[in-house]
Length: 113
Image 1: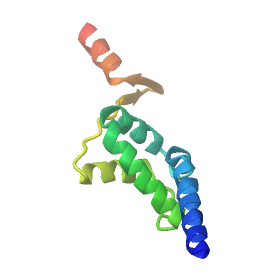
Image 2: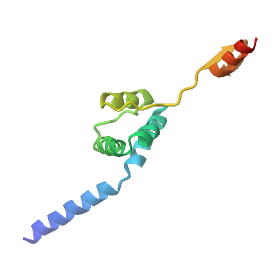
Image 3: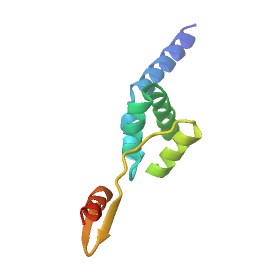
Image 4: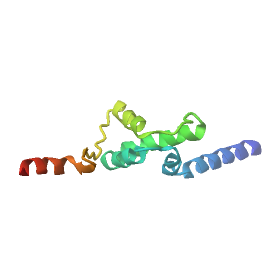
């Protein structure tokens, strides 16, 4: 009887420890490239679902099922496969004659000529 109670207490303590690990902190170590930007955009657009995905990814990392770093393209692809179209801010830059300009600036210059 006592042994059973001790075992149950240990299980509960282990469960609490696992819950106390912040999934965001675990993921931060494994995100590379534009992955943090993709994750932040997903948090803003789909907060509830993204929290759930973060927990699952963190759990997989802690269990050793995910060993490689997660890049922006991979994370974006994951959200797309789950049916979540994450919209990212993009900038198109043009380089001419050693100058780098945004597409907007380049078009304005062409129209003003």
